[in-house]
Length: 197
Image 1 (cartoon, rainbow, N blue to C red):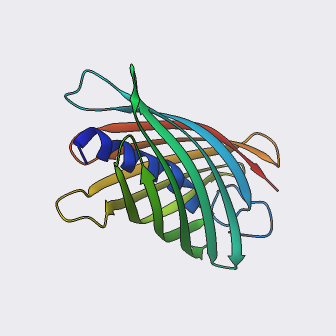
Image 2: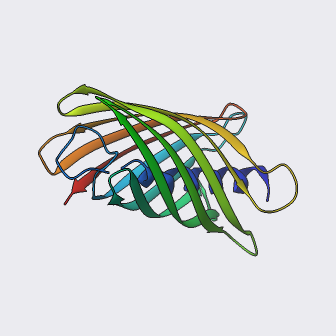
């Protein structure tokens, strides 16, 4: 994969992987431990490149046990002005959660499939560790570090650091924003909404 296609695949995996943040039966400020569906739009500033990348995704998250969530997602990313440079990705993840008061730590493991123009395709995987902090009864801040890669030989992996904030506008609807710093100096931003059910 070229650097641009690789970055789009990682951006897609990050977008689909945001479903990994979730579990709990009573409404809480965060996304961890919640059952929800969501959608977001993203922008990636690709360092040393005259073009930028954009993305959109849909996600679903389901708590399956007290400290275990399962998430699913689909994303599409593209490079501006080049409609033939795009990547679609589907993914699933499991998130293990540990709660101490208003602090929730988590480990998430994901597996997905990304495909693009021609024969550009790859099975991708990722792992994240992080923590979610309650700021108010309706908002949280989460920080995480992660690594995403494919199963092909070579150096295709990317480290990232992500900060995510969410605010529950109502008991069912939240606004979610993320900023991710990718290895190599690229920065990705997303803004979206989730519906808790």
